[in-house]
Amino acid sequence: MNCRDVERSLIEHEKSGAARLPARVQKHMLTCDRCREFMRALNPSIMADASAPEILRQLEDTLTAGLRPVRPLAPARYLFAAFAVIFILIVAAGVYRLGAAGISVMSPGQSIAMLCALSASAGLLVYSLVHQMAPGSQHRISPARLPVAVIALLALLMTGLFQFQPERNFWGTGLACLRAGGPFALLAAVPFWLLLRRGAGLSPRVTGAAAGLLAGLVTTSAQEIYCPILDASHILTWHLGVALLGASIGLAAGFAAEAAGKRLRPAHR
Amino acid sequence: MAPPPSIASLDCLMACYQQADPEAPAALIGALSPALLRFFRTQDLMSREQADDLLQETWLRIHRVRHTYRPGQPVLPWVYAIARRVRVDGYRRIRRIRAHEIATEMLPESRPRFETRNSVPAFETLVAVLPEAQREVVTMLKAGGLSLEEVARATSCTVGAVKQKASRAYERLRRLLQEEKNELP
Image 1 (cartoon, rainbow over the protein chains, first blue to last red):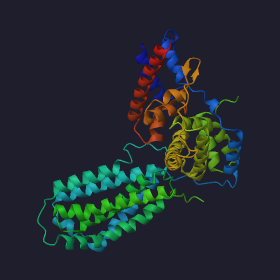
Image 2 (image 1 turned 60 degrees about the vertical axis):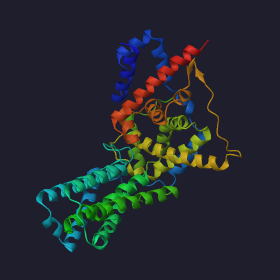
Image 3 (image 1 turned 180 degrees about the vertical axis):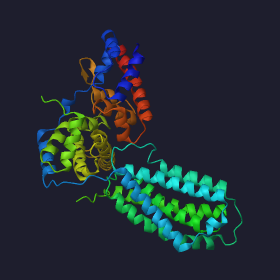
Image 4 (image 1 turned 90 degrees about the vertical axis):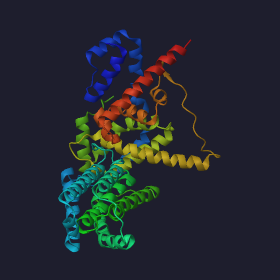
């Protein structure tokens, strides 16, 4: 075993979380001054860092005063189900109100690809939001990068599935589409926010962007099912644009909350 | 000196804290504060007072969101994720104050003097040369006693990313130690 192997073993040891270093590392350290010194330097003496006793006592008093029992956050799968049910119910309400003309003019391939992509995007965003609610959760995808990736992938998919066609009344039809679908995003934002209030909300701007995008995707999904216009520029601007707008509003709200020093206060009391 | 509580007892203490056991906050504060203070002190070269402020802020935030801890889950990543956020907010606040009051008494603090412990550089001095992300990982691993997976949870990264940061940090620290040694008369 050489010094480089000791570094590797150290990382493996940290991965396992075991209390003692492997025997072969300890054996190497008996003969290697450099590794011994390296290990000594990396072992801080924690007890030298204790705060003043009065500060700790004051903290204890503050936390103990008015201490009340709290109900732990619901398991992740329940929260996931709650977000998913809200999403599906509001999209269903949108389809019930507006109709499903879009599905009937799309080819089966386009319908399946769009609905699968929108469901997968919503699922990933819900997964990320649920994990953001509980600090220290395991994130398989970076919460900050996910909204950007979702928007980029949906834009690519829409560009690939639909053709750019000249549209006579781009603004008129677009604004009508927005007026019809827009309120559903607002409708979804309220229960999403109420659910998120239960969590810790450590990074309001990241949580805000993801939640805003999810609310925007409610409208995008309803519009995809309802809107019979298959022009790529219309879909990108007026369907995906709502999701992008939702993410931007969420991000701005997060920035405002951070700037004001506010946090999404828990509603556990 | 009493030994620090085990990970399992931290879980129990946290569950008791949620059930409003008046003994639990004191036990948790006693068990976790030294490592948290070290975490703050090694980041951004904070003064003792600033680190104490952040420690208090962390405990207040922990108190406010204590319901978000799920019994059975590891406590340390939960605590460090909160502490990390408090540090970021605190760092921004300190930077803002320094930007406004640089001409008065809030002059930037000098880097800590090179301290040695039996010819070995002090932990803070040693990790101060690392980039912020690597410093954070090494401090959590070494001063906080977190495993790689726990650091990944606390920093919202993958285990692979944490492993890479730790590996680069160790390589750099070993090189630095060697250089220091060579420079000694």
